[in-house]
Amino acid sequence: MALTLSDFAQSLTVETAFSVLAVAKQLKTEGKDVVELEVGDSPFDSTASAKSTGIEAIQNNQSHYCASPGIPEFRKAAAEFVSREFNVDAKPENIVVGPGAKVFEQFFCEAFLNPGDGVLVFSPYFPTYLPNIERRGARMVLSDLKQANEFRPEIADIKKFLEEDPSPKAIFLNSPHNPTGGVIPEEDLKAIADLIRGKNIAVFSDEPYCHMVWQGKHHSILAQPGMMDQCVSAYTFSKSYSMSGWRLGFCVASEAVATSIGKMVNTTLSCTPPIVQLAGAAALNCDSVERDEVMLKFREKVLLLTNKLNAIEHFHALDPHATFYVFVNVAPVCNQLGITSHGLALYLLEGADDDFGIACLGGECFGEAGHGFLRFSCAEPNDRLEQAIDFIPEAISRTDRIASYLESHPAARLKAPYPAPE
Image (tube, rainbow, N blue to C red; front, side, top):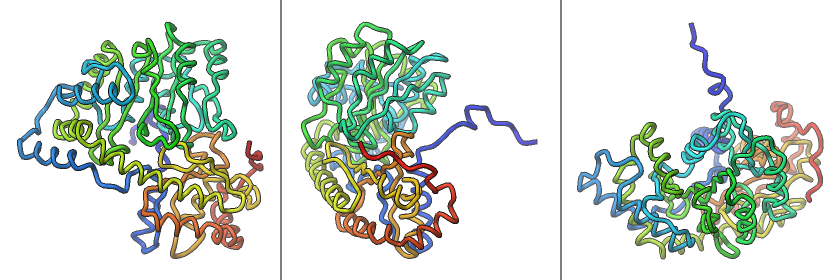
């Protein structure tokens, strides 16, 4: 007989970008030319010191178990990094290493959430937040981000959550924000800190895009007085240092919380390979100039993509604030064609042309507040970005192909018009 999976296992959802990635890769193996703008990966090489130090670590046989929270060299480098760049008063004891930033969503939830607790999440949201919250039996409470407000969280919604939720326990912040590119300014972080300081409210501050701020600079809520005691901030090497395949990140928290998360690492992952940690420490200590040069190249890509998308009739994206995504409002086009935004994304990939396709994501992949948007990544050469966006007006003019796609993919039909852009 077949074993029955748990209710939790059956309820799991995955990051849609990787599902679309699989479709794109399959189409490419079949000979289709696909411009891949679906996954948030860097098209650039890992930084020089990371590569050379990783090779040296292999040659020096740095390939054995190590302490679960991280090797001393890495924890020291990470603490100095957040202190130097974000004015966070961190020491090595505040650092825990892990395979990227995503794993700290789970560890945060395990550290603070009990069944029934309320967790405020701003939508659109990164899709792995929900399963990690539900893993603990907690409740996700949504607050919508609005394009008209530059996708900034509403302070009034935080007050409402704290005052009206039956068991408020945690807030998820993501700035710079995936998928919208919104940024929480320092004055808003101060207001949030003032609201929760001294209360039994924990904050998960998700900061993978900390060096991809195109207007102003990145600020962490951890820099606000007293927030080290109430926050866990997560960072990754995937974006700033183009080290996605190395699987390296870290969190910053109070020493007590870091100790607890270190135990979670011990019971699940054992440790992050010291080879990878040494490479990461070298990147933090030596590669800031190379990193910043690459960030300028990302900014160029984002500007190119934004300007070309805004030149398409009824497409509307904000001037880029941060990240290497462009989150463009396409609700009028979807309403006109009778197709959902993710249906439009898949049509551009699968149905618009037999030989050419664009892989991007519908905004609903990030929650209902993303309906009517498309998210484009910039992880392709500039000429390929131009080729992709230049094809979109032609693709949406092929009404016979759209009708055929909707006939074979009825789930992509738009049941009710999207509201007009705010």
